[in-house]
Length: 216
Image 1 (tube, rainbow, N blue to C red):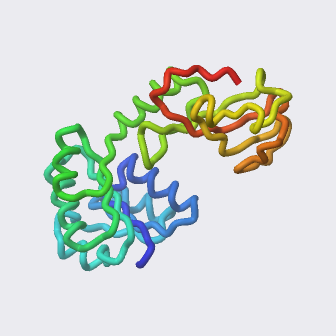
Image 2 (cartoon, rainbow, N blue to C red; image 1 turned 60 degrees about the horizontal axis):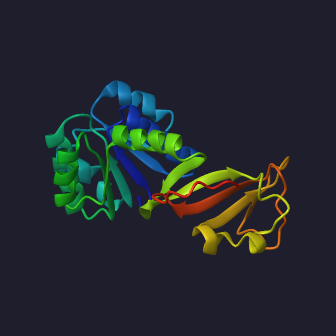
């Protein structure tokens, strides 16, 4: 099972996480203790097991120790998710992610050594608020929450090149891609001498906390 991803808890969040990874080309193993969830997931995931995930021996028997990543998403039970997370760390899984129900649960999981803790409602609220506050906001960078991706449509910058605009020095932003108007092709790391046209779309990397309102 090396390189495979396991999802423990096939409720809405866990199930959609799992099938999205499958659509992206990953091999995903699903685990749940409810027959209806297991049955539904069998048509979408590579392997599905019905076991009690709070039983460490059961986790070992399905080969959980051999996966590279595991997401634990077992509803509102703080005790169950914490216990499974502890077992996952003891089994030596390199990357353990857990869905938490609140910030206190999040702190507990980090104390257990969990690599990534997710509070879906919090994430969704922050993303939505950011889209209101930052026109064109796409998402935060995984490596630093103070850095985000933003999409801009070219208007005032039309007729000028990246070199002429000197955006990195003037605004401390980095243009990482250009999608020309009326084209489906995306050019990554664009030519600094490309002349922007009205309607071109660019994706930039910027400091989320900057107050500068970019007028592209």
